[in-house]
Every structure is written in structure tokens, then in C-alpha cells.
Picture 1 (cartoon, one colour):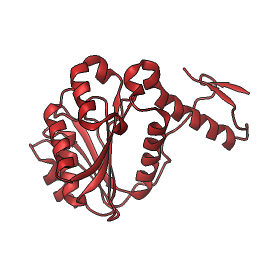
Picture 2: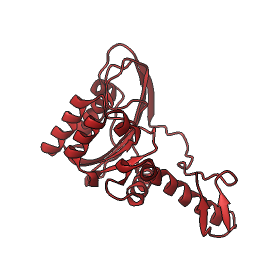
Picture 3: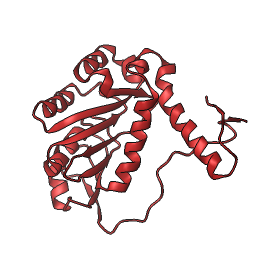
Picture 4: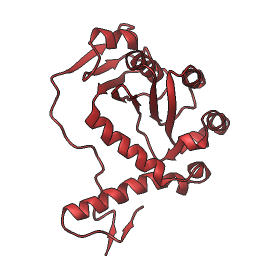
Length: 234
């Protein structure tokens, strides 16, 4: 049986969950740093911090402050673009050289290459196509984890660079949320061959199509429709 995405819409969102009593939500518009916000709100094991800021720090500053708590860790960074953040990319590369970040995987949008091809090529040369997937994405998040049991998810409205606008930053040491996000990252990496997303829009579209196809199949099974042999995706 053939299903069209316009008829049966795939839902690959995270599962709902109860609001945690270990969450702190704050507004900080007086020049606070990422490190000071995490400290004053007691970030740590099993803790979650949500903040609205005035753009006084970048997503890389946020990750940097989180690694002070976590210690050496592996990372995933998803961002719409890294084009305006050469200095921030320098910092990430330095973290890897210092074993602050033990490994780093990236998810970026196809438009990154279209808008800034020279910077995108330098980005690929630094981190390697094996560590990068290109998708139709506007999501900005990071995953940080290590063998000591840290499983941190960081969600932001910001790209890597600092931007003098109201921005949203979040961090949670939450194994369940981490597992769901990590599974999605694994699906994206499995859906695309090395470098293919940089070569064409069709290659970049593979990741989102794979997520939708998986969600449609799971939904069909859940609702007793049966496993779909083919899914039409636009």
C-alpha cells in the first residue's frame, strides 16, 4: 500500500513528559555569562536550567560552560549555520586538541554551503565529512556525554555565534531525553553517505525524509494499518 505524506503526516517529535521539580527558569539581561547563570541556578546532576538572555554569550560559550561541569566528553552540535562563527569554530577545534571534547559530530543545514562555500569547505577540512551530516534543518541543539554518566541535552534558539538579540538557552542532565535525541542523530547519520549532503539538495533531503519515513512506518504499525512498503515524501 502507498501512503502520501499529505494524507498521513509523520510525527517524529519527542514524547511528552511531566514538568520536573528540578528545573530552574530565569531571565538574565544584565550581561551575565553562561558560566554564572549555570552556577547561580545550581546546574548539576539531574538538573535543568532554562534561560532567556539578551545575547550576551553564544552557544559555544554555553557549551564551554557546560563542559566545566561534565569534564572531558563527546559532543554533537546541530546548528543552522556555522558561517559567521570562525572564532567559535576555532574554539571547538581547540577543545578537541585539548581533549576537552573527545569527539564531535555535526548536523548543519544545506544552505550553509550555498551561502558561504569557502567557509563551509574550511569547516569540512577541519572536522571531516565522517563527522558531518547535512540536512534540511533549522534545529539548534547539542548533546554532551561521557563515561562518568553525564547525559546533557542543550537546546538553544541561537546559532554558534554571539548575537545581540533575545535568545533562549536550555541545559538538562536527562538520560531519557538524551537517548531520544541521540537516536534521532544516529538515524540522520545512517541515512546519508559521507559528503552526499554537500553535493546536492537531494542528498541533503535524505535525512529529513528518513526521519519521516521511519515515523510513518511506526505510526502505521501503532494504528494497525500495517507496515508500509513504500512512502511518498516530498
